[in-house]
Length: 394
Image 1 (cartoon, rainbow, N blue to C red):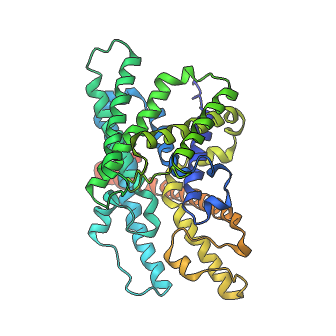
Image 2: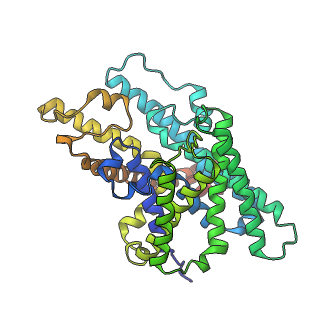
Image 3: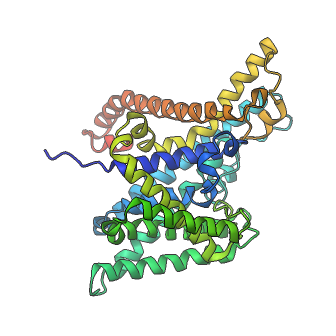
């Protein structure tokens, strides 16, 4: 049996992008591990980098089974979004009750069925999950557009990919213009604009994989010189502030500025991973992060809260954590304990959030494995055959 070839460069790219997401969800994150943040701040490319990876690994064969592809994406993105929101809705309510927070609101049907799509900030632990609905919409849009466009007799694959890439950038530009400098409030327009920007980032990944990657051979000295010079020029042009907020579609630097910092950030990370990927990308830690980004995205905020809860209990019992801020712990999902002003302590949160998410994922896998025989027996008893019970637990 032919062994599947692993692209370790892109595994490392994915893992680094995931670590940037986790660390950026913490107060003081940019100070505690400031090295990669100064010139290429995460909010200038880190969310786009994730969608770029999805576009990079897109398989045109998906267009041959359109319904199956969309159903599979819904099963893997939308169904977990609703189920995890349901669980975390009640977990957060119980946590607030245990902490003595007054007027705790229990989940409602709107919180459970509508907010995960148009907001995802209805519960503290689900704030990072806004990504899922937007990615599903972007991937669905992509496969539908490609299915329709494939019927046109294109003169070459390069022309086909170039035209689609240009179209995707135009769709993303709609999001940038509509969001503008103020951004959007939660609602269906926000979901649409989030998704359109994701379409553009998805197109970047696909165009790179299908057209540009074979030509990505410039010597690293010149490559980094060009990228760094261009980024410094942008830093000067935008007075050192060139980030944007895709979650709220807030793009203060317009179409050209937004795309420029996004592409330069991704280009920088791509070359770093191209150099380090063959060695570092094979690390079990890197592969664990890269292969479990879904779980890390969904659970790392709960991991932060668990770690802060441990610090809270230690402080209650010993009184030795004088720097612990109870109000920050209760009210901010980005709260970080900073003992003696050491903002580098944020690294403890980053590691704990990732490890916690991997443990949740492992526990879920064990639960599925344990439940599968019971489901199969139930289906055999009810219908005379096991059918597709395995698929129910994927």
